[in-house]
Image (cartoon, rainbow, N blue to C red):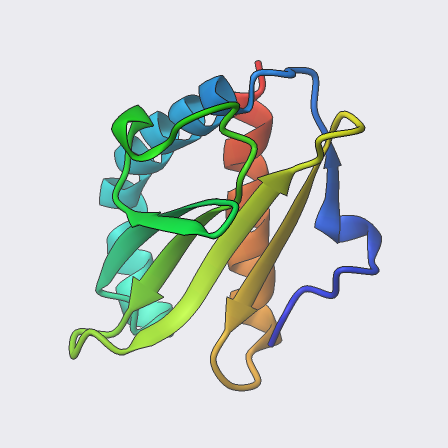
Length: 133
């Protein structure tokens, strides 16, 4: 189940032009909320762990924090969620536009689970909104 790139939910207007700062703020909020949300994610969706993936052009770096980003930091950012056996089950992704004040966002969940996609997208959007302050 995937957020369509062509629907309104997949676009967020942002105030900041500093994508690196927005990502840093996002990571800080995510780390705090992971502890609170992990029992819900585990019970409802089988999510046990996560990993951050940073994209810049053709370069991919696994890890969280500014040390995993370089340059203008406008590349994509993804949180990959996995089952306890480490099999990926879902992800939350975002990437800022280089030409307008928007972030493209989406969630992808293995299988047909609209409730999981809606839950994760709502959480993702909430983190981005607070990170943009």
